[in-house]
Image 1 (cartoon, rainbow, N blue to C red):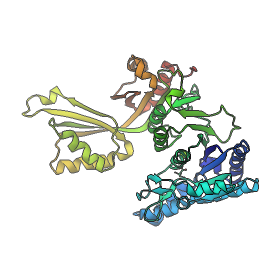
Image 2: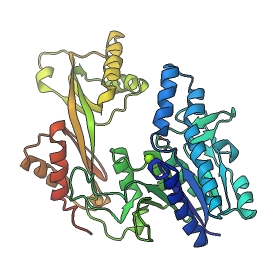
Image 3: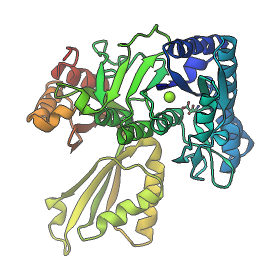
Image 4: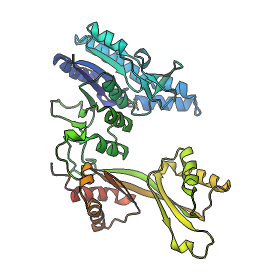
Length: 419
Ligand code: ASP
Ligand code: MG
């Protein structure tokens, strides 16, 4: 029988009525002839509450016990979903990660999939069960301990099952009705996309469009799992939601498909570091060890600082999330004290935001950057740092202009118009 994976996020299983609503959608697919693997999140707010309890009990907690506690929210919704389906005369059974077993690495709190053997579930489907309900976000390590995948991990569970069981599609039910050209809270002109390519979705997901966990999109791209993002609050039909798929499935796309942003960015500049082989490694090695997610990097020879010095010098600028500034500063100061790097000053600007335009059409169209910079200039927005990739152009700007910049770019690339 053809198989579908249906994933329900926290708001879609927030209480018993919502679970019944979700179960009804599963039942409809069963009636259409599908076997279904349902992946559930914890009820909305539950995981935050569990994380809070762990932190309050033990600030330097043992990550194995963190996972034991934090994985429990999904166990509750998986059992309740199976019971609800049984009440609707749909033969269903729930599974916790270790029962499948979903084998993962033993990095507690950030585990990765190793294998999802099919035998146990296949046997259950062969017995006549039509639905397997899986607790998302969790697995089991080789040591036999419960693991979790990192926040938002149920999306990745869903894609991993879709790949392992050759599902026809992986439907991600959430509280928004699809992927938009930008955040509808920033401009009412934001438009829902019918389709978006994996690559574009990956850029949008990692740039701060929070609908899908980034890892789930990476996995979907690798195994070509077609994802549909849709709302569990709507009555669905074949065409609702947004399909995230291979670019071959998208006939003609616009040059730019979406505008993404990330609000809490910081810009750090190391003034006058030595310009010699190994300096970038000496700076970014310690930052990476300290867990700082460095994003944009610019290295620039400064004439001014070069003059009158024996050795060449350069300025090094990079961006990272504001919440990591303290860690970054400490890592750099430690490296300086240890003598592996030297600099005259560390300048920190914590009032930045990043705005990006994304689109696979950029590969074959020139002039996207010029159009973007013109639109920002017309609004008087100053650009601090620029970075580009094959399908993305990002700028770092003052945070206070972020909304304005997103609106201006949305207009400049006519994203409110279809096709
Ligand atoms: N319940 C987990 C979280 O809130 C996993 C998920 O919902 O995807 O992060
Ligand atoms: Mg989510």
